[in-house]
Length: 438
Image (cartoon, rainbow, N blue to C red):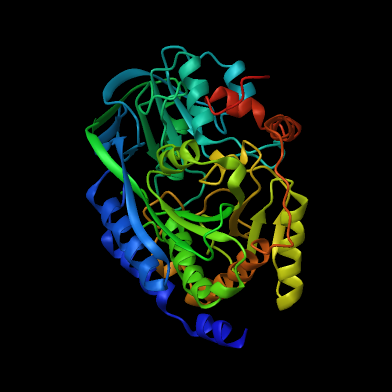
């Protein structure tokens, strides 16, 4: 054990790849930088010692950000278009819905109006409300445009996709992101006033892909070790998700040194087009024999804190494996049994495939710097990458063990869990409910 441990603790391999990714700049799905990142990840997996490294390409509905704006009776406000927003210009009365909870939409007439919705979810509310759910309530209420206001102070407008709830890649009404300060000013000064929201964008045909490589024995059963390579075009995408991709290539390097300990094949995947609807992982799941997947270890935005946080989706054996690793290294690992119906594990987990969503423990509520121009390398630490890579390497070796059985669940069971956590409501609203039963 000492050799791989010491090598990983001293390694610069993953951090060098993180720098490669952030220095590309724009890694937006379907654009040139994303493919550059996918090819760099393919090469890093090969250099790590994984075999058959490749990029599996697929077609994609592209989206290219143009200008956007908000014109009020007295001011011109800074904004950014939200990905998958349609182009358009709408002039209408502004209505500020604050946190834009479902009951606020129910009690407010938004038809023909421009809705301002904060990214905040109050602590008293029992579940997280995703941006796309707030957008969809506005669409169904007849709003003509949507303004998404960051709840974190700092003059940073947020980005994030608003693809259609019917599965179409483009949303129904123009949508922009504004900073917390701009959102507060719009609500204070112009609630009830007529304003104009404008979005310019292009939607060309495009190409994305998945960077894939393999380690371990050539078994029919396999483990997926994954991250997503794409990021939004307004930032470096350091934490979301350069961090996750740097981690899986570092883990791949350590696993290559421990390949004779692997009882199960490990398929490493750097997905494309996660930020615009989990496109790469959806395609992978559609083409996979789900019964052959032992578990999924998906790493997304994991370096915001030093302590790993593993969402286990109520799979007891995943909880047990994480605790074994924590005890083996006398190192904290946080586990939570909740369902996380976002990121690239979900196209598998929703059908009962055991899976971890790997992030980090943080006191932040919401994305923090994520999905803003401040998601930059200077906020991350190389020691966090090394420590987490060591723990995740051990976790993959553990769950790959021939003596470790991780039973799959029925889709109906996963649906029941989502209902118990009150997540089904939002998923149905946004078209993300995958089951043909209630």
